Length: 171
Image (cartoon, rainbow, N blue to C red):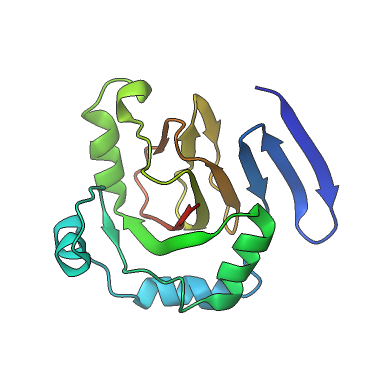
């Protein structure tokens, strides 16, 4: 992959691996949103599916859609990406959950998945586990926003620490 990058005074380094985009220091009121994530109500996949009337699976816990709770963040994501935010959720995995998920499958290729939407993103809130994207390792960094073609293989990295992110699904 070819790395494309530029210096941006507001968001420090912004780079792109063709269909992967990275933006540093993305959330303006990061501390407030991270605190909200710590106090949010989370659901298992089964609980969420029952409430929303859908069939999805993931490891860990996720909130219901927070898109309308954070309209300024939603607007910033849409302006940054040129995409429409369909849904976004706080998403937590306990370190042992991610670690167990990673250890039970022997190769990265088998751990990855593709989403139903065309575009997805992650804003890292806390933890240390980054993301595997299309064979590349993207390191965790607090308040980093990555967005990418969700049809390319991707997965969370292993960690013994708890991980919380905002996941964003876009069209």
